[in-house]
Structures are given as structure tokens and as C-alpha cells.
Length: 146
Image 1 (spheres, rainbow, N blue to C red):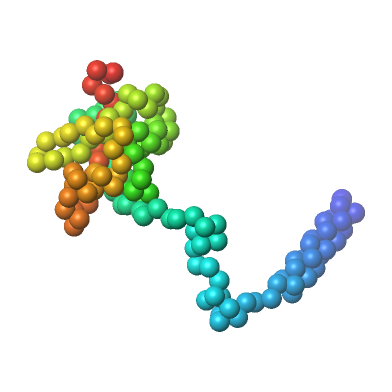
Image 2 (image 1 turned 135 degrees about the vertical axis):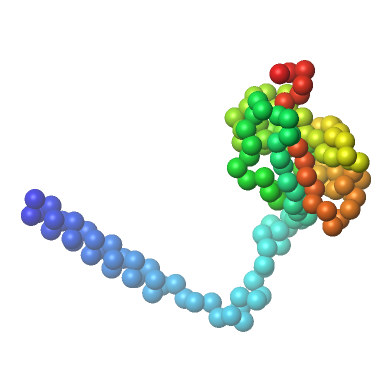
């Protein structure tokens, strides 16, 4: 056991020395050079970044067959469509198949079911046209699939 402790001590000391050498090799970049570096991955890769949208994805009030999401507030690309949102939701809730889920929103105090091909950007712009209000979407199992 004494030899084992000695080996462990030597191994630990060697690791500490190697880390110290690695730290000395790294040179701090002066702040003036930092500003000239690209600030986003899109500039590096030549890709255009999609604008983001914040929204709430909440269980439909009368729904009891599926769980609530742990985090209802979501930030994602505005280009995501309802079908992709259903796949995300099905994965998070361990529910299958995603096609049995419905995504709804409230318009004039009544719920409307959103089609699979509509994007979050169109929902924000055309359906929930007040930019000061939070976009709240609800999900449920399609009533005929229960």
C-alpha cells in the first residue's frame, strides 16, 4: 500500500507540473487585439444568424394526459415551424408520435389550432400581432387521439 501511495503522489506531482507548463505556454491576448477578433460564429463561418424569438410553451388547461414542461419559457429561431416544435415537445415529454400533439394559441379569447407549416415568425407577426405581449402557445394531445 505504501508503494501505491508513493505512485499516486508521483503521478499527481507530474500532472501538476504538466498543467503548470501548459499554463505558461498560453499567452494572454491584449484587449486591443480581442476587439479585432470576430464576435460571432456567423462571421467566422460565413453563415447568417437567424433572429431569435422568446415565447411560452404551456400545457393546455384541460389537458391531463401529458406532463408540463419543466421550463415553459423558450428562446429559439423564428424560422422554426410548428411541426418541429411538436417533435421537440414529444422528445421532452417522452410522447410518441409527435403528430398526435396539437399546438394552439389564443385569439380573441378562443383557442385556435396552428397548422404544422406555420413558423414562429408568422405566429408573432400575423396572429399575435401585439409586439408588447408575450407569445403564449399551448399544447395538447389531439382530442380524437386520446
